[in-house]
Image (cartoon, rainbow, N blue to C red; front, side, top):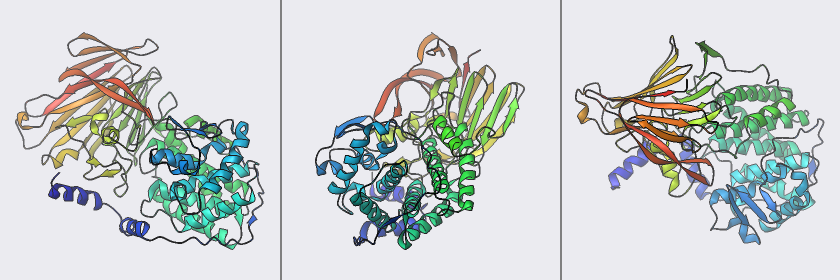
Length: 564
């Protein structure tokens, strides 16, 4: 890449940032605060309510010193293991989270947990290593406190370490990142400030509440979706809010009734939105960074909410009805759900994320996912890693069920968490038809390649069929031969078996023997290999139907999926 192109890439990335992100990035990197390790006489707050069991995630401590994170197992022996440079950074972060303290059947590993906490304190001296970075510190602090509130006892050295961790975090709040990281910092400060009693902890509590109360209206959109538009991170933040409801009910003298009521209202709105972002199998859709096994599931979060006195039975996003189909539209987030008893389509007509925080964005604009008879058929590629050679591919347009033009991405994703030019959805239309619904939308993401270039997509759904039509055009261009090569991809779930019926017609067989006809009415179609990454550390080979757009004055394609 030439120096000029590289400079332009950086400019189109940095120009969206807030001033606080730029200033704080330099501050965070170059200012090294010191930690005062002198401790006061420490007092713990006395709970007045009953701590409810939170969401229990999967077991990650599989032996006394053996851990499994992101589908990678490693034994950690000796202090250097906590910061082993041979291990991925995200794996090491997970090592420091201590999620296993509150995981499934955690009581069976109580002795291991006691030993592990003591070992962490001994082998991770203050401010040194991955464990003292702000994000893992935040998650660990909360997990230790949740474990203690469940009736387990932290030793004196561990209580003192926890106190120092909270003190350190106040000087390392991630203002340069904002988003979900900032909420994690704030949650940890609220937990620590509530768990400990005294003037200094009261300062942590006040800081955490100020951050949370200021950020929530910005980060949680009016339709209840977290503004980074990742179903996985939405679920993580929803669990954070539920944990704060739990904490407020356990310590009603430390957290006000107003705070409790506001957290309950936010949780209810987020839970309604989250239901819309899940497939009939009860698992999340893969828009932006998303993978199974990281966040709580819909059923887990719903059960947790009910245990906290949140009535989830009367919830639901307002829906339109037409010819046996229902449509739920998350207007602010930009996601649409179409369904009946046999089919569920999830459509992405969203911005890639907030302008100043697109780190978890994929170039997936106008992609969609489709389940039929309760099983996934059309998918997006998912997320298996935040690092390495696979990361750029998994964020690319090619890894999603949408249109790629000239081999380029609809949004200019680069690095591991950066985006320069972004696709902007335009001309969204949602209409009832005699058969069901028609949703049309376009985006301008490819105008950086050719001025005025537009990709438009229309979904027409009836009770027994979905027709997807794509068009690539420039208003002033009459000859489509001057337009770049454009292809629509339909990535199939690995469980789907595909067989050729005749040219441009395939039969898709679902595991339960359900059959779907895939018919290409316009365009030149062929199969290619693709990947499906349902979890971190897992990438599966799958099939993809590729349809090349054709035409005279514009390029177009039309595909029909028929399950009737």
